[in-house]
Image 1 (cartoon, rainbow, N blue to C red):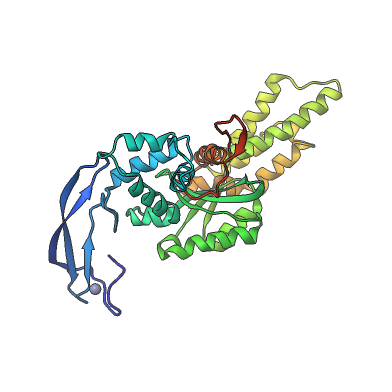
Image 2: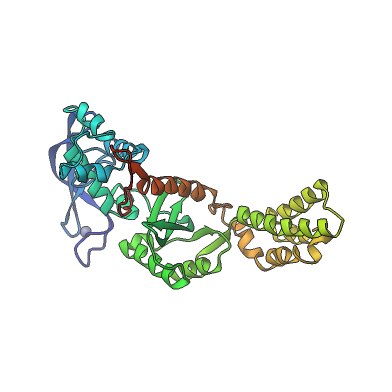
Length: 359
Ligand SMILES: [Zn+2]
C-alpha cells in the first residue's frame, strides 16, 4: 500500500475504514464461502485501497489453496494438459484420457475443465514474478541464478532461472536464443522491468561462469556474488581425473588416501570461515597443487577468494546452487514429457510437441 497513492501524497500509511463488502470465494472441492473484504481510505490523499486477505488472489474466484492444488495437479500429471484441451476442443480426442477424465468424473464437485483451462491460461501467461507478487510474496533479496540448456522441438534454447532458496520459489524463467553476457543481461532487465520491487537484489549465488556473474553485476549494481562451492569441487574432480591418468601413465598411480587428502585440503580452503583461515588452508594445500593440472585449481582459489568467501559476510547467501539444480531436474522431466513420443491407437509413434509455457 506504499504504491497507488495520489501524486504528492506523503504516504504516511494512515488509513480509515471506507467500506466493507461481501464476496464469495471458491474452494478446491467446489464449495464456496462468503468473505468480507475491507476497503480503506488514505487520510492524506483519499485514495481507496482494497485489502485482500492472503488467501485471495485479485480477480480470481478460487482461493490460493485451490490454486496451489490445481498447480500441483498440473505439475504431477503425466499427460500434456494443453494438448488434452486442444484435442478435445477440436473433437480429436474421443477417449478423453488421463487427468481430463478424472476431472470430469468428479464433476460437479471439482473445478470444471473450462474453469481449469482458464486458470491454466492465466498461470501460463504470468511470469513467476507477476504470480508471486500477485500472491503477496515479498520479493527476494538473495537468489540463486543459473542457466539451463534445452532442446525444444529440435531447436536449442537457454533458460535462465532466478530462484529464491529461502522460499523455494522461482522468480524468473526465460527463454533466450544465445547464452551470452548481453542476452543474459537483457533477460535480467526484463525481469527487473516487471516491478520496481524486483530491483533490490543484494546477493546471488552462481556457478563459475563469468558471463553470468558479469550480467548479474551489470543488472544489479552493488550485488554481492557467491560462487558455488559444489561446482568448484566438481571442477576439481575433472582436473583430478586428468591428474590420475597422468600418474597412472608415469607408473606412479595416485593412492586413494592421497586423492582423499587432495579433495579434503581443497574443501578446507573453500569452507574457511575467515580470510586468515582461507590463507592458511591455501598454504597447507598438498604439493600436487604446485604443478599441472591441479595448479589451475589452486590459482582459482587465489583469484576467487572473495567469491568463495562472500557467504562469511552475508549469511543469507547460499553456499551452493544445489536447490536450483534440483529444480532444474524437475524442469527437465517436464520438458521431456512435453516432447515425448507417444503411441497412437494404431500403435504408430508420433511426436507430441507443444511450445513450452512457464507452467
Ligand atoms: Zn495517500
